[in-house]
Amino acid sequence: MQIGILKEPSDRRVALVPDIVKQLQDWNVKVMVEHDAGAASAISDSDFKDSGAEIAERSVVLQNADMLITITPPSQEVYDLLKPQAVVISSFEPFNRPEVVQELAQRQVTALSLDMIPRITLAQSMDVLSSMASIAGYKAVLLAADYLPRYFPMLTTAAGTIPPAKVLVLGAGVAGLQAIATAKRIGGVVEAFDTRLAAKEEVESLGAKFVMVEGAQDDKEAGGYAVEQTEEYKQKQQQLIREKAEKADVIVTTAQLRGKPAPILVTAETVQKMKPGAVIVDLASSTGGNCELSEDQQVVEAHGVTIIGNSNLAQGVPMHASQLFAKNIMNYLKVFVSEEGELNLDLENEILKSSCIAHDGHAQYAQ
Image (cartoon, rainbow, N blue to C red; front, top):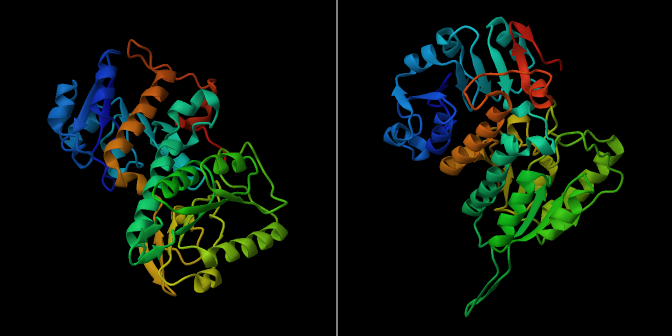
């Protein structure tokens, strides 16, 4: 079997790294990598060659790949060059773009969607969403510190004492917890909000104060996503967040609803009442944003507040993001690739059943 790896068109990461390529050699799996695919992640073509990979032009990679692994979904031009019946592994987000499932089925490819891997204990080592979210939470705080016109830590000097920055993290999932930990490390005073009461212990273990609104609906089966709440709860939530936001120097928002627009947690009215110079980093901007004034992939200023909309901050740390992504992929491949390099797509397997969205000309995913 031959795996193809492309240079991502709009992402600095690469889907496999040399260490993983070496491991695949032991499985009798060959890897062909597009020229300069790892350049933005500080991985040279010679690094890939030393690990046993073959370097080729894009068209050659596609024409020879039995399996294609990408970080962002391939373009139509990629499918036109790909072998019939090839296996394509990427993050297709069928819950946001259900039409992609029929498109893939018509292409006669087997499509495995990384974002559909179930969030169960058995699959934790394959969870690319968690790996990338952790990096995004870290990067969000550093980005906020860069835009913030003041120090993060308390500073005592002969000229006087500067109080620490106040940070509010909305959503205490993987990204939120890493944002809390990073903000604490650089000296911020942190408060965190989450609808899940179970997050309280984790938040407090990192040294932050947990902000709670009574009456939240909690769903342990939501896979780390937020859960739609009642209107009464939303009103109480808005009021509390408004009070906390007015005192905050930095807000990091991370809440997303699977298959639905992200919940508005920071309204335009709330932004208007925030401190001049405050910074909001909205990690949910790709699905509408938790801040009403966010624009995806844009930095905007409103009422003296800087609002950064970016759901793809993981690519800002491309070297380690690629390493983690590639390790997730290797663990995922162990489910359906034998140590002799043979493909065994058992669609009754719990992990494959959830993540296979198209196979043998048929759609496997129902919204």
